[in-house]
Amino acid sequence: MDLKICTRCIYDETVPGIRFNEQGVCSYCDMVDALVAEYHTGQPEGEKAIMEIVEKIKKAGAGKQYDCVVGVSGGTDSSYMLYWAIKNGLRPLAVHYDNTWNTKIATQNIRKVLTKLNVDLYTHVINNKEADDIFKAFFLADVPEIEASTDLALAETLYRAASKYKISYVLEGHSFIEEGISPLGKNYFDGKYIYSIHKQFGTMPMRSYPLMTFANFMKWTVVKRIKKIRPLWYISYNKEAAKAFLQKEFGWEYYGGHHLENRMTSFFHSYYCPTKFHIDYRNNTLAAAVRNGKMDRALAIDEYYNKLPYLEPNLLSYFKKRLKISDEEFDKVMNRPPKYWKEYPTYKKRFERLRPLFYMLSKASLVPKSFYLKYCFPVK
Image (cartoon, rainbow, N blue to C red; front, side, top):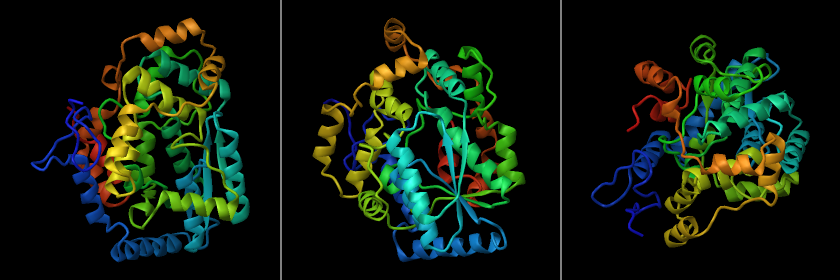
């Protein structure tokens, strides 16, 4: 290959915003190191810091039915996050956004874990035809973020649940150690982006979809001051060990790959992005595995550059049938030139102008540090 590849992980020169130092180590490795230093990830200081936060959560939730909310998808990280909360004496409310594309395994995983832990579930279910209309709008818009509506809707649903039950803390099961830091460049989303894409390409009103507008975002973070905490940024966390524990403790079942617990997300990762946009998000987790010493760098490079992502049998036919797209129309869209978020209205410039505000919000754990780093700076 003629591409320049990081000497430490497997990110190459095509990754947006990447820089290499004199040793050939990329700026994303440096970013991970900086986060480890800041959060003392997996170190006694990190464990102490998150336990201090746990005590604050308990104090804020005293006398209430719940003291935190935890988003659940049926995946590894969110399932373990729920267990971790219970283990540390918290009283979580599990929250799920159902985009109606869940796999049967994911649905059963949620039920198994919640039943054994005796945790209540708050679910927002979108009208399935409306969900499909939003997904199809993004497909017709020729942009990569076909499943972004799910990620943003989950965030909005978490905030709504927290507000309804007067809960001050949201726990998120994200680990930058295991998942890496997704580069921002060709992939972006916010509420205005989702609204503008659907307005141009959708065919029915958004009524059951929980859209996070800028006003809502400010309400949740500045007015309600609902904090977002990522405990896995502090503690020692191993995804493979978590899978084994969940399987043994809850009868939890693995769904076959990272992000494959939802069929739309699976389509996005396994086929849509790699085929149309030449974006393969396996590099995030593979790079993280190499940084952690859990995978040989040469093997990771071979996996990423020489092997295709796993594609669930019949997934393409299921996608076409649900969205009522003919083979001819599907091929036409897949072969059209890609478009990207900069070609549609977004809140991005507003986030950049308000960078000092979001810096303060990130320091107060009112927005994730990753939001500040990725959304509040210009992208070249």
